[in-house]
Image (cartoon, rainbow, N blue to C red; front, side):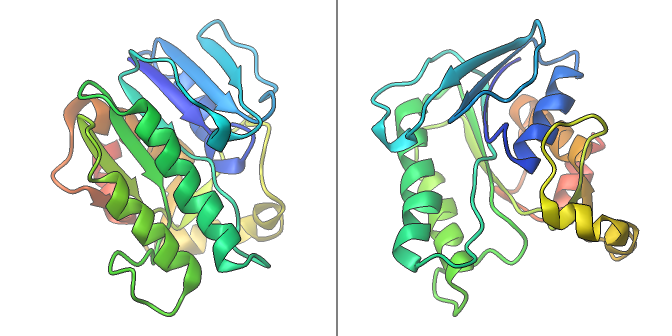
Length: 211
């Protein structure tokens, strides 16, 4: 399986990258990122793109795209967050869309698929999910993880996890935790086998990772 990955310099993408490189079924990973991810591996290629919205084409022939790039909504206006979390992934996906490619988008628990709720980030992410599912891919799957546990050895872990990582067992016990190894395996399995739902909550990610 050939995989295109975004967000390799963020916590989610960095963990998914390490897990994919350790997965025998994944033969190639192309990281599309604004800056180098800092990882060296025979299976890894990199395409640097400082502005995803400025892209006019993307390499084709990939079995799956794991879109893990994203930003926090803290301190952002709705217009700026929409540009980052709706306009950017949709533009990227439109360039890549192919009936032979599976597209997987990381959103988050409590994303609002109705697009009508009071929480700004949840509305924007829900709008993105809905728009992506209309594109001409083999399949589109929106992953909504909650608390995620880094992969051992990954280079990028956000500061919030460094402060609150000790609470992960509590999230796991409450059914709201996903190790990034499971997130990556669920992505690989979705691309290989498909899944009966196109919006995957924490429990769905766990179930798909175990297949």
